[in-house]
Image (cartoon, rainbow, N blue to C red; front, side):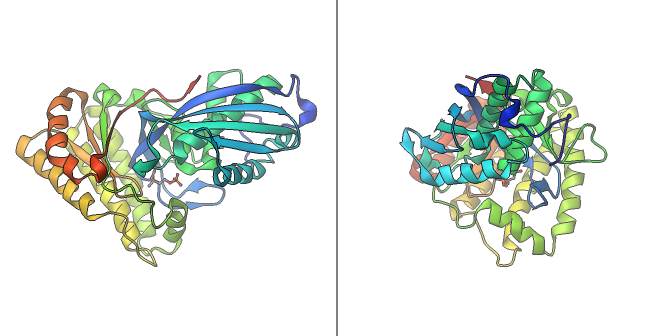
Length: 359
Ligand code: PMV
């Protein structure tokens, strides 16, 4: 185990309180500006990344725990979901070196997402960070540990990372960096670090309109995509580009340099998809409407001079990013020019949020 902050494996025998109770967390999704794409070892990133923590797209998770023999039952939006249940069982087994006590606990998990199933939005960052936060709350209650917030969120970020890489950034407000960068203070491959206080406040209230170009399930999962980076001929160049982009982006955000912010964010989005196109086998996740929407955003920016840009995660949907003070103009443009190119006219309005909270 990577022992951090004097962690020791927590056995049932060390419990100081009863193994019976309930915990609940709300945890948000996040959207990366510099993308994590490629990993090694135990969920360690091949390059550092940074994301905005979102507000409206989140998972609410409630877990009832009781002494037992490691059974996991999962209800997603009120219905038993065995596929998700298996994933959580495998995850819990994989952290047995950290939480051996979970062998003696039964978990009944109730998970709900704020965003529609049909939107084709990845929910693993919000769901897996909510799970990790709930497990930390169980640890805190049963063992009287993780008293300081800093320790609690450190461990929650660590456990989120083991569940789904980029989920580790979701526990923190505003903006978080995950992955070591020699020139950026306090960065680590093990956990994310909040960096909202290091940027111009204009970014604290940034808006994110998600244009659903297609709600279909992706043909290649993110885990398969990360794996394909192992043989991608551009991998090393990419990892160093990401380090350099992260450094430049932090400098631009500190100064509120919008032109530089836009240049880097769009370059990162298109590079991510270029890496997919140059994997073996190659694949394309953008759809025809993604390209039309990209063109619309760029033309609108050119015509109006307004600081609006797009990013993409590993899928066809456009995340349009813009400062709060131009929301009215941008939302008019989105409504009139972009909605017709969204599947079933679906757009999700989101913005930078304050991170996870106990509920
Ligand atoms: O954390 P994963 O394995 O779902 O991968 C996330 C990958 C991207 O969303 C494309 C980029 C990122 O940094 O979030």
